[in-house]
Length: 193
Image (cartoon, rainbow, N blue to C red; front, side):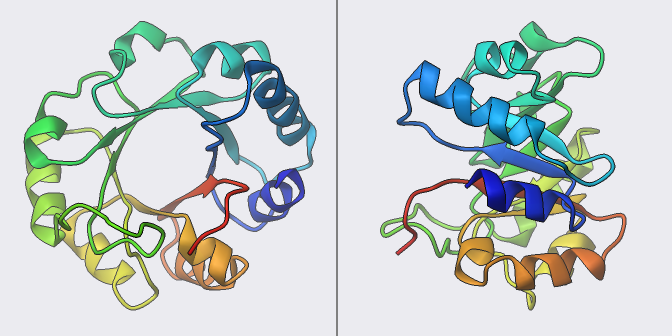
């Protein structure tokens, strides 16, 4: 996974989230240090899923918090990014202090066997209308529906299975067509169905 993160980072993806929920703190720290040390594109930032302590200790650029996690303001400091997940318009309205809001699932996710209901483009429009926090759309994003996410107000897209199943080609093509559209890779070593 570290090798893939370096390659994608050099290809124009602005944010790479290390999403390894099952690793021990030591293993996650080792992986994070390896990814942080890799050559990457100008401006590519490395985030660690839900472990601000590991992110800070290993020199990552920020943390991604799950919905209903710790308040983003707790980690507010210069140069340290905080992204937060939200799975409803109502939950998104209560998030304050994040640099980005990851709204999901917009469409039926390709990476989950039993996903919750898709929020649809309406959710992007509602959240962006009421919040100044940039929204990244996640869940079932393809090259065909990514433009609709942007038109609905998303500042960028995020992907797991799109990137894994195509080895990044489609994800990177989408990003190249939407500069300065923000791309977030949720990096994981788990198999995608």
